Length: 220
Image 1 (spheres, rainbow, N blue to C red):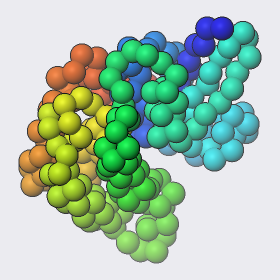
Image 2 (tube, rainbow, N blue to C red):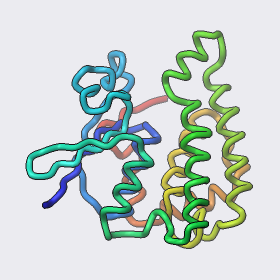
Image 3 (cartoon, rainbow, N blue to C red):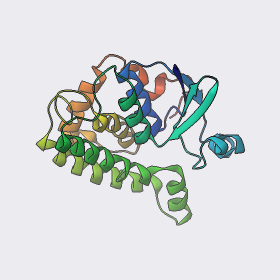
């Protein structure tokens, strides 16, 4: 049975961008469904979206088979699903157990160690407590990316782990974009910037940039 994909996502969400990159690497088509997470209190908080994803977060992948839909959320779970169920493109998780664990380690360093600290609910709480949300985000991005720069040295090739893109690179590209939004000078991470450039040289990746999405808006 043929599966078609609907990706419920937001143009500037780094987790959504990870999934768009995975689709590009796998050469898969999908329907883009915009969920504006900032307008009118956030469309993710509407009851109809909560029925799809009780966490009320993007991205959410809708798998349509025979007129029936199933749903997956959490970007890393979605990317692993695409890697395991499709044959096109590079393997995003290596077959070697150690290298596969290293890929997951680097990916989780971003997914668990950096990105959650810059989410909208965290920013709201930082501001409620009288803090500077941008200074907060800059601090944790710089700390996390410095660790990633050091950890990458063991396995880096053209990409973070070897010569083909992996889940780690899927996470890296959106995180560097976010870091720059929060005032980080990413030139202090030359290995990460080199890998980022290699990712954008891969066919299809440039089209996944936030500003090239159908729901993108001009921002200062």
